[in-house]
Length: 77
Image (cartoon, rainbow, N blue to C red; front, side):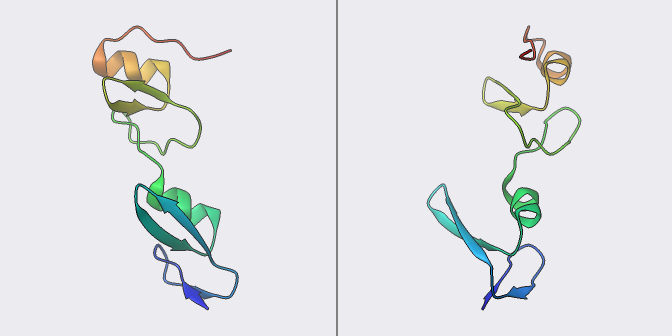
């Protein structure tokens, strides 16, 4: 069995994700998201969808991107 690097659970159905040259082991998508997903640099929310990237910074929505960077971005409809 493999141990989840987020919660420490030793689980027979754990899985690996390879990202940026490193291999990570998790027991659930929730733990993988908690560990690997970026956080909005304005409000701190976990960005699970596309989000917005402005000059190398990640934001959860157009509002946060505009508020933090002054950039004019729009959410996709």
